[in-house]
Image (cartoon, rainbow, N blue to C red):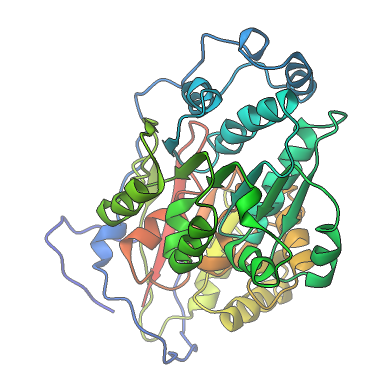
Amino acid sequence: MNYRNNKPKRKPNSNFRKGKNNQKRSGFKKSTLDPSLFINKGVLSDTKEYVSERVYENMPIDSKLKATLKNKGFEKPTEIQDKTLESILDNRDVLGIAQTGTGKTGAFLIPIINQLLNEKRNPFALVVVPTRELALQVQDEFKSMTKGLGLFSFCFIGGTNINKDLQLLRRSSHVVIGTPGRILDLVNRKALDLRGFNTLILDEFDRMLDMGFVHDVKKIIYGMQRRKHTLLFSATVNKNQKEMINKILNNYVTVKLSSGESTGDNIDQDIITIGEDDDKFKILKEMLLRNDFEKVLVFEETKHKVNRLCSKLNKVGIKSDQIQGNKSQNARQRALNAFKDGKIKVLVATDVAARGIDVNDITHVINYQRPLTFDTYIHRIGRTGRAGKIGKAYPFID
């Protein structure tokens, strides 16, 4: 597919060969985004990495919590943790604007755990996140921070046996973590009473809205009108989101990190143009066989396409796994763990299933289909180019 734009013409990376494209077009909506949007030379920011002048040992938190943080190897807070701690401890509502991987989970868990150590109220906090994977990550982090402290949490997510959730709720818990749909399911069954919670935490708020959870979130908020404290974390905040946030938070403090809005500036971006006679899969295979493609996240648009692409990659000897809605939660978690541990080279995912994935050393993000929106594209490629490194992103244009 040829295209024109007003930018200087740049050829796609010539190292990638082209052959015959034997894939048929589907009936799904086709992106009309200008390919020139996907071309950018990554530049590392001149902004110095934030280093707190404080250590946890000297911060106003319980000594038992200090000990567990020390055992985890946490010496200093991240920027978002450092700048929100006192406000949260003072029971101020907080809006934290920061990307995934900046320590947001610790930013709300540390003060919540500290408050629980001073007053073991049950239940105390409800943490709402957009995806199963993120819910499990928050649960694991809570468990590791509270080991031996006598604090307990439940995690409720879709794709699991709800009868087990109902049994769990017969016991007491200090923190409940879950996805909007499963939480509301438990509320509708009168197994979970939202009125008992003191604190509501909404994490990855922008993703929740993007995924269509706006009505579920509103129902949860309505059921928690007695709450005294609300914390909201989001990677980005646009005008429409801000209007909703102003209705959720009261007299709140805003903390926005310098890296709080991903622009892709630290990511090398170039397009892979697929002609009518080109073999799209062959081009992808040759890219992935290169040594510099160490840990690659590949996006496809549907569950069926993810499954098909993953199978084809494994057949040609490229170790791959997949995350998509038809997979069980256990299968999705195994795939994510294998990707984190370097046991597989490629993780193929739908956009919805991949949200909330926090893997720091992804070298490349490939969009096998052109994304429908630029916002979706920016969120996807934001998973590479972290920790002071240049990431690489390639959308296929056909």
